[in-house]
Image 1 (cartoon, one colour):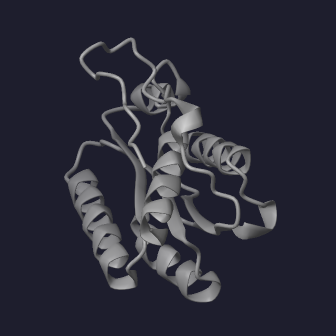
Image 2 (cartoon, rainbow, N blue to C red):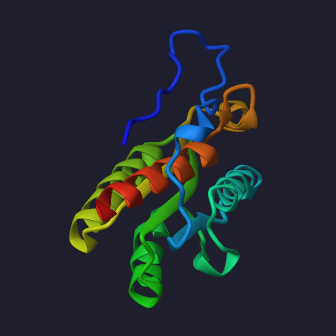
Image 3 (tube, one colour):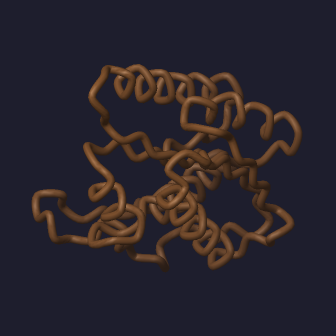
Length: 169
């Protein structure tokens, strides 16, 4: 299986969600969990919709996609664990958005979520995808959730498909 290529981030005008869709593995018969934060829902719901579109386009049945909502990005780790225990999906896609504020709260949340999701993936021995935007402002988040830099929900779903296929080898 060959990998996909992300376009260079050096050119800030490039849509990072553009990929060779034909090279993404077929996901027919696979099950996926999507855990989405309701905080910053304008952003996260757009990312969720994009992830769903990709999964369905690559052959995943709607009945094999399990969606759970959590209050904020901090809760993504436990939400992912609960969903994994109940439905045993091939991969979990965690979608959130943390926007920098005036305090260090941003750092604590981002670090906790990144470490929590990494550790959960290792504990479960299955792909747990970090689809969390960590931006300086709302405009940057919009640009990455369907704006000029694409939609990170697409990239999260593609990554989940690749990793689930890799685990099946």
